Image (cartoon, rainbow, N blue to C red; front, top):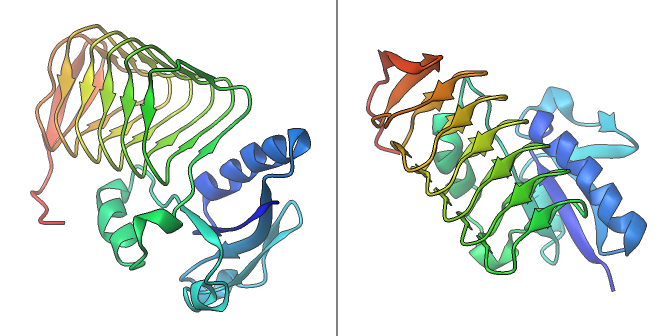
Length: 221
């Protein structure tokens, strides 16, 4: 029996996650996709691939049996992800975890709740992916690496072995990380950057090799 599902918000991450859901249902009808919800009333009634924006957060009360995939976040606002998701006020059990059928996942890899992993991603042995994460297509997370809660990882990213990515980071598409390094919580790694050494928390780092270009304001959320 399929499980009902809502997606939040009507942004790029959720619309791309929809492609993973269609691929899952093509193999086995696991999800009844009810629609999107969004705080922006101007988006209500819009649709993607036939799936409509049903309304705002009140829709969660209309469908108390439905799961939710909550995937807000962009390079501009990723540091607010934890607060936005917490603001939904849902128990952890209500969140869904979505893996595209093409994901290569080691049997000993751990993946948290409300995490979406898109097409052709490889999650290798001993890897731990936290709660509330987004990993876009064609990314590789190599052995014994750790991705903290609330992280967004772009497409075509290469994470070498034993890398530790702190909570609430944003890793731009095409970035590459050498083995045995750490990226501090809340940091952003720019598109196509090559990270060859540790990156501290709360910074933006770009380039090849990646260097800190800006320190971000400390956030309490």
